[in-house]
Amino acid sequence: MPVTKHVADMVAEAQAMIPRVSPEEAAAMQASGEAVLVDIRDVRELGKTGKIADAVHAPRGMIEFWADPQSPYHKEIFATDQKLILVCASGWRSALAAKTLIEMGMDNVHDLEGGFGAWAKSGQQVVTE
Image (cartoon, rainbow, N blue to C red; front, side):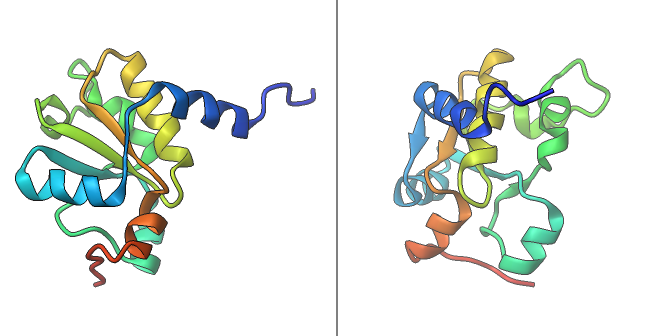
């Protein structure tokens, strides 16, 4: 069966409905304690390209389960009043994940414009192990 709704369209829809912040805004929000950055990239991506200092790693495949307080996999970081800024490589997966969390009822979710690539390109701190 052919695909009738393309991922680029889904991302565009998500980006139109979710709050988005620039790397500079995200860095300032993280530094002030207003926000927590949540990196949803695969662990192999973190090892290959580095990561954002003090970002929480929450794999994309687990985000709904970690966010839901009724899930046996729930993580307390998702039960915060701080803003949660989702990060992926380019902003596509994080937009879809943010949309899902908003649909689950969360109102403190944001998306990092341009993802980790934009973060690194803007000169924000990247740590490697």
